[in-house]
Length: 443
Ligand code: SAH
Ligand code: SF4
Image: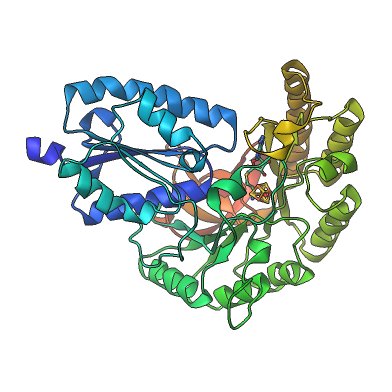
């Protein structure tokens, strides 16, 4: 029993899909070392916290959770506690964690996560307070084992880092400069996934539209999409995230023309006000963004458009915010990740003088969410009576007599149908649209 308990690991992940994917790699490495996963921290002999620093909230959660681990370590001195991810790439943070939470054994960053098995072994052999952060990114490490959460849908990273330096954002500081994976490596990973039974992949990068820079022979993101579309056995392809300044007509045409590319695009706008977009260093205007949206809607019928929006950026006036609201109404997004601006140390926006009061930020946030939800509900209504293709993912959480899955446009559908079809594509007639999901029956 003791032996088995010693072989369990627990990983908690905060933040974006990139972090999720990094955790899947850590999990893959641990499984290769003979460990099994557990959902209970108390059972684990290795606990990893994979952190995010994009907003303050995520950071505060990490600190709270780290404090709570002290008791577990007191009960079990063999427990190994590791902390990694974006927070660790920030100046002074690893030192602060070691000082305030001496029960942490290993600290490592985003560029050296592939060395985790080595770090674990070193600590097991007696090393204490191991701290290794690389500030310069190394070459892309291929071939790491990945233990994916789903056995139907997989994330495949196509590029790392970001060169954009939006003034509010820490990502370029903690994830380094853009580096693209070779198309052959991406294709091989996808082919392996298909052999394992995966049906849908999402190509990931902070700015997928600048994929390919520096690669020989030269290749654009649209070229990559067309190549991936040729891979036999794959049913659906999605991708994120696209920066509006870089999305090319060719990418829009690829979605229109390639049968496996889903009619869905995530195009973060951040703000509808030209002066705020300028202060954010986004390199596009409201008018340009709306032109791109118009083109997308014209070329790709029934496309679903999603976005990210920040409220309360320094200097945002009521008028600026109204511009965001009117843009949201005009585009009528299918969903949006909405964020209250969070001050991040060492970013230019943190130095800006005209920071917005919390109360104003919260009020604007609520008004924004309302506008987003209105658009989403209107779009969902358009599905009533239509028959759509759904990839069946499993039983519905809320009602186990139903099964659940997503349309090509990414909408969640709960429906009556044959459970034998879990893992397959089926046609579903939509009978009712709710604000955030659809109801239907298999046809
Ligand atoms: N590379 C992607 C997104 C990366 S971060 C892109 O450019 O679209 C995900 C989202 O977090 C961003 O789109 C932005 O809306 C939000 N975000 C980033 N930094 C933030 C901050 N300091 N405060 C609030 N939201 C932030
Ligand atoms: Fe951050 Fe901007 Fe890069 Fe996205 S494009 S990761 S928001 S700096």
